[in-house]
Amino acid sequence: MTDRNLPDWRSILFVPVLNERFIGGAAARGADCIQLDLEDAIPPEQKQLAREHVASVADRLSSEGCDIVVRINRPWPMAVADIQASVRPSVRALTLPKVPHAGHIGSICEILDEVEREKGVAAGHTGLIVMIETAEALFRMDKIARASKRIIGLIVGAEDLAVSMGMRPTHQSLLAPNVQAVAAARAAGCMPLGFVGSVAGYSDLEGYRALIREARELGFTGAFAIHPNQVPILNAEFAPSSEEVKAARDLIATFDQGMKEGRGAISYQGKMVDLPVVEQARAIVAAHARFSSE
Image 1 (tube, rainbow, N blue to C red):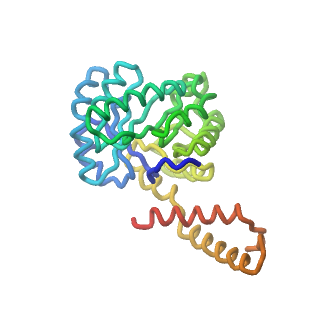
Image 2 (tube, rainbow, N blue to C red):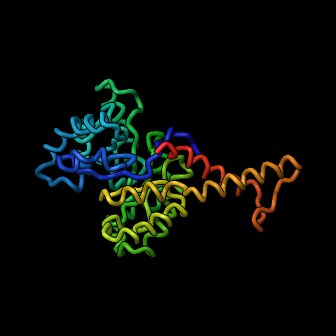
């Protein structure tokens, strides 16, 4: 996996950039990242007003300790205006909806190069989270994910993909695209974000927890949240439990002792353990170290 200096974002909470009540409480929600939305949460007649507010809101929330991303719009005239309004030191990344192919990423990056230069922002500062939401993009995920070192995350947009594919957004229909997304993201070296389900179903929190547990098992590292009640679930389920950490440490210690005794594989709790299993255990311990300060 290529190192892209990825952030540790388990929870990325949507906040409409024109909703002062949500903005005022955003920093206290516990999300690893706040996503200011210029797309679906903003009516067409308020897009320009939202652009005019995004800089001050991003700076304000950044000063309160939040990592900030901004989801921009897809049509080119709106996208360019959104980029001009959003690029600044306080904005860590832009989320790109409905990315059709790798060439689209190239064009976005060319614009970002120019805007960062104009604004005196460090070259390459602005990362990208790519949304796969069309049938056109589905079979191009690998090339899209590898299109730029700016890409830090990849996610399937369930509802829009379902419309494009003419399918219902069910667990069965969304499983294959999401597993494909994990593979594309891991191969490219960016974060696999999401879960197998619709982001719209936020009222059933226990059902949501089950989906997030499954998402971690599938290889996802974080996901978008559209409601603050989802944030604690994301933070808990995308981090290893204390039981997992203890078991991982015990396994590593047993394996290390076996290596000292000249054995390349060991028996641990009735199961054969070799290096790939130990690497999984080490990944659990490393993930715990990243989040243990909370």
